[in-house]
Amino acid sequence: MPTAAIQHHTPALKQKLSKLNIGDNFAIVKSARMGVGTQLFFDFAQAINMPYKELSGLLNISSRTISNYHDKKKSLEPAYSEHLLKLIALFNKGEEIFGSTAEFNYWLRKPFWNAEETPFEWLNTSGGIDLVTDEITKLAYGDAI
Image (cartoon, rainbow, N blue to C red; front, top):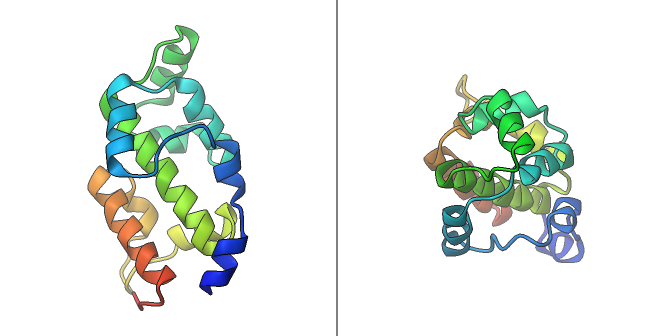
């Protein structure tokens, strides 16, 4: 995708979650250590049009646990918070590069490198998120993957 298109496009996801400081890994870790509220989970799931159960599966936590935390106004533990914040950062970048979360979601679910696995399947680990982030960054710069 041409860089000019990226510069003139203000991603809708970024607008919806604009109060988050997830510009770099330090900011993500700092926020995660304090724990993020569960409302962020629900807002993010809605913004990317992903069922709660599917998103909670990526975080390796049950949707029932998320609901219980929400009912008790309890923040997510740091590990879950970090994973969620990294997913949000990834989807922000994906929306910026692909033009919409729908297009990014489509790409995530296509087999990767002529393999049977899809990038989406890697999002349940922090390292997998990092790998997918690296790959879409390469795409943004015109590298073949």
